Image: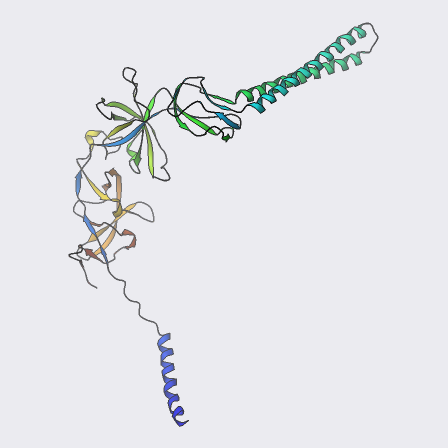
Length: 382
């Protein structure tokens, strides 16, 4: 017991020391200095033109479907087949619609009989009223019955016309000559009214359709002349920009451009679906700028070096060598050249900017310069 009593002061002191150590705040370690990869801004020769691979399509493509629902019985039209105006493309099972048309015709005959009977009664009662055997009120009643029977006959005829049209709509015919470029339903399938069954590219003007990256669409304007070069030994054609998409594709983030092709030379048009090369002059200048005024050299940066500021606008991190710190510099972009972004203002050749990892830096932060695996990182030490 004496031994335990002698150990109590030591145990109590050790417990108090542990409690005080747990309650004391630990010093926050300083944030490590990040190593960044730098690149030197350099001027490059401006591209005089830029080319895109495009597909030849018809300016008008119709997605054809039935105006009534039903089971697809047959589809004579095949993919790639040339069709003429009025040609049968597909057929629905029309048995129910034919029965409906017959029932409507029977209602017309019944209404016709009722009208004829009401007309005979009116003529007979007209003769009796002329002889004074009936009152004018009774003749007016017969006239009202005749008019009601006439209205019912007209209603029955209109309903029969509707049923006949429904029966006729079970046949899908081409409105104009063209080529079948898409098939969306097969025989045996039940299709809804208006559902696309075939896509027909109508004969006539054609477009060269291609996609441009985000930022380049501002350099294209409707009516701008571009060069269209068919693959092979075909002569180059002069096309005009007909349409530039107002919004980017949600998946590819590119903008669709349609270039109207000139009329075929000698009646020989470019085949639908063929690939052509569209050359856009003045790839780095705005479309409203003349090609002769395009700059001889431009500053370019990879997209990884550019970040978006909270208040809007593009910016880069410029490295200050004497202090080994970075500062934000707002830049104005002017399109793309190859895989790089063109910088119109905000930077000068020879400056060093951070090439990657821009999202983890802050204004005035000290950094180390990454020199590669063989050199490590150099810069200011804390």
